[in-house]
Image (cartoon, rainbow, N blue to C red; front, side, top):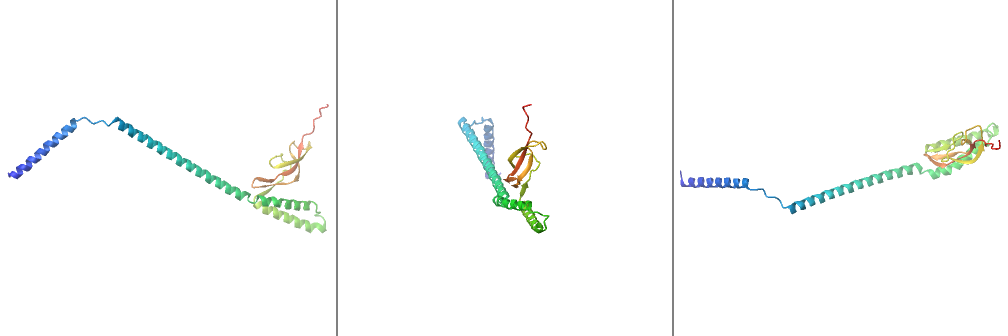
Length: 200
């Protein structure tokens, strides 16, 4: 065996011995404990990061809720605008409808001279009512119904034993509503119960 080979073997044996010593020393050494102040600092940083993450999550949820509310309000505003854009125009048409109805009431349809006029006015009225109905304008004609202060305006109260108290006896002028909103209340005569004679 050559001198060089002896030297390589010796170096390898020395390295192996040193490795064994280092391993044993590492196994026998006690683990080092981290510094308590360092641990406290890390715990504080973790708590701060957690709080910051929660705060950002809350802010994001709040922003999302606000956006949803804005979207819902905008949709409601658009819907109302579409439903009630014709409110003023429809209100201006009501006197025209009233006039046509009065013309029919005061025209003798049995008379040969006025028969054509009556039919013309009647067709005009039907056409106008049909047209406004397409846009959500409906008549309020509560004859015989219970009085509803949201849709009816009581012009007078009359004693009546024929109908229940607080019922509409007569409609003096029909009301109208646009998509459920009252344009004009119906002007009505309301029944009240007969007076009780307290003299007996």
